[in-house]
Length: 85
Image 1 (cartoon, rainbow, N blue to C red):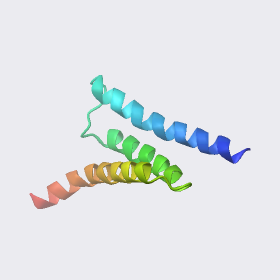
Image 2: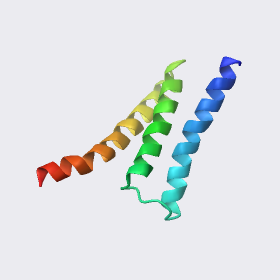
Image 3: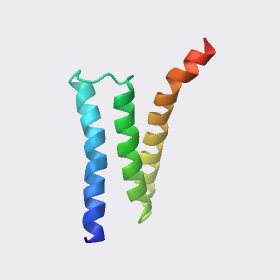
């Protein structure tokens, strides 16, 4: 299989995960505070971040790494808040 085809398919899957979560939230099918929404964002943006590193594309690396970190924080936050209470 051609490597560029694998990269294209991977980036499509990453983008699709993010877009499904976004559309689901906008159409009120998904709650942005739920685990599934944040997992879709974290996995999709992690895939796109990996692709943005090879070859290195600064703007996309910053965008996708930030997106991963925010999504992961949203996943950890409920457990963190429960411990604080």
